[in-house]
Length: 286
Image (cartoon, rainbow, N blue to C red; front, side):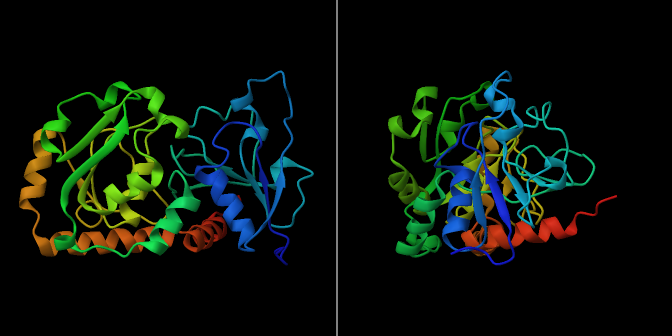
């Protein structure tokens, strides 16, 4: 079904993350009639693939991509170091590393495999505090030095794989099994990944797992998440157990529901699109 208002997203076919993250969310927006999608060409092959302008998604409300500066940049990359070859924009939305640039704004967030995640939510009911059998969880891989430390001593289910297990065909747990383990946990440890935000934070929130973030994690989005409302912050591994022990059932339940509400507004299929349009409207062109 095509969108009558001619809203078009120019979707990259280079730059990675095909079939996952925001690239898969674009497909779901199209399949649900929120927008039209045009696949972008490879462009200038003299420039490293992930630096090319064509490696980023763009949106145009009128469906005219004759000039990139008439478009809205949807910057979905992990870090803001891929901007050198992007000529300009009328508006720019930053999901990961939020850059203080003209006509730009913080944006939404997403999970690693949206199609599987949303289906999991449909098929599995929300579990309250007493229905969750696991106290705390972290499942991830050793992708950077920020993941050092004795965090495993304070997390009841802790798995740290090697870097090669970051890829879908070599994960220790398939994505459905991973989500089952999250949904059965009360608290989720969040350690820095490739960029300042982690997909894990959104995955926790959508399943009502209360995140415990650590140094190096950024949670800045258009719709704010707040410490003590949506998440806790731990300065060191020992503080994780202190946070968990001091958190009452009532506080956990309140924060768990807050997380789900935030997810629905910013990371769900419909909420992510509606918030994106709200962000675009909020940016004033000088």
